[in-house]
View (cartoon, rainbow, N blue to C red):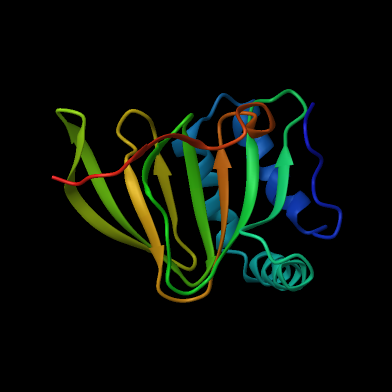
Length: 174
């Protein structure tokens, strides 16, 4: 059973509509990233969403402050609140995805897997107003946020069924 859009974040519906339109035309990660990037250029849309997410984050202090699972299960949108100093595990994903940073920045370490172990292959910073994309099996990464960050993550899966966007966590680095 799909989880509904969080009702207290009405401006999220515009972003969901943009994702839906991209997915309905057959787009996956890159097409969704491009659609989100166009909406990120709309300062009013970003400002409204950031404002509403900040209110929701104060009301409900969680990492995922809003979620929408598309009724047909084709995608999930999560609005994420990252505290300063937050660091994820090294992990990969159950499906393709795109992330749009609304406020702050996501600092990523990117890895490849050799003999079952993650090996650093690069770093990138996705700052406010920018998008990133990930497609398994080349999506192993770790994210940290040195400052308060709000981002919108889209996954090409029904996370109410999978329970998580993470396929595997890696403990060691070569």
